Image 1 (tube, rainbow, N blue to C red):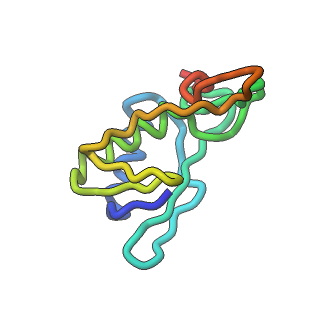
Image 2 (spheres, rainbow, N blue to C red):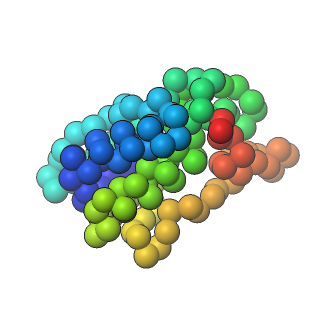
Image 3 (cartoon, helix red, strand yellow):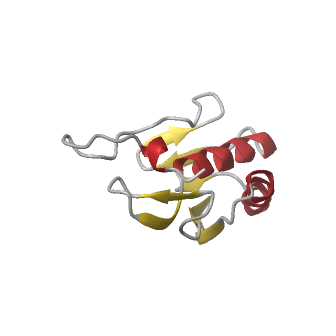
Length: 117
């Protein structure tokens, strides 16, 4: 992901989400290139804020809910921020709680269903 938000906003938002939801999120990637900060977040597996694969395997990745809470917090601190996630441009006006299908045709599953809450 990349964003126009400042590094202080990203760090504060991650800390606020961890505290509010009892998560253990951290940055997997955090670097500045040009005017954007590029970042990804991770979580230890089998804890709140982590996710499973569509087949049920525990992953050391941040969940759909963790990303959504982080984006909400970023917009709460810096409302004019823009976040680019994949091909999506996310702003405070567009909203960030867009769920996608990650399973297969035989075993359909939405991204939000893989969250460990």
